[in-house]
Image (tube, rainbow, N blue to C red; front, side):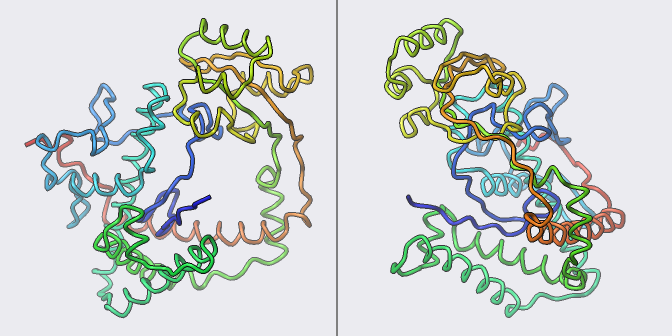
Length: 371
């Protein structure tokens, strides 16, 4: 199966510094790790009091938006509506609109809000880096940029050759496949170069994790090293309880699940997956769903119907895996790496907190960039 290579420029405090990523699949609208799901909406100051989430660029009337309009100021740096739109396009999965067709409107608002929020965070991070380098009188050379470009190109080539053995790698062709221009790619390479030059002096001083540090990290984060209970599932998405009753009865009578899913499911992915969604961890399920699925009396391959928010599902569970607890020895290498990355993230957090203290938070100029 063809796999797209993700161009990840850098992850900082939960958001990209400025780059591209590809999400292979969207799970159902209920699929969301607890604590990071759609139950909390984070908004930015450009949203109006009625919480009207801005539309993505391909849904916005270009005649009503001044892309050069400055939305935020951070010291001498500006963030325009056009920059926000471009960043949104970079970090929005290519099949976003298709997947949102089967998602409740309130959830769609949440997803749009988070995409815009992350875009603004990315641009804010880039602004802090530029301000820092300028104040420190640190220059970025073409040789620096070329070095970063080669590193990124080598990574892409390695991934490509793994997925397509024997086929020649061509950077421009790969970028075209992602819908990314060379100009945009090089802009992100430049951002990455600036980031590395600004942060490497302190990140390079972080020592490798010792066994003692890893064990302490493991003890404090044991839940991270649990393999949660999972269920192998397939579902049929429906508009109403009446439709759910109809489909439920058909399955109970012995109708083929895949044929029934293709005929009745409102999920746009059904044409390619026949309703199968695979193994889902318990902690990614709504509580009412997990309660049914992991009830000892629930039978495998027996359909049940359930309402999740505004939608109805008929679900069949094909398999269950119990939770597995790892020992420190089993998780030692993962704990070492996680501890090391945790130290890096804390150092980065401290760095950006200092930049925010010096330059201030983004100051909104005008939330409505209409001509």
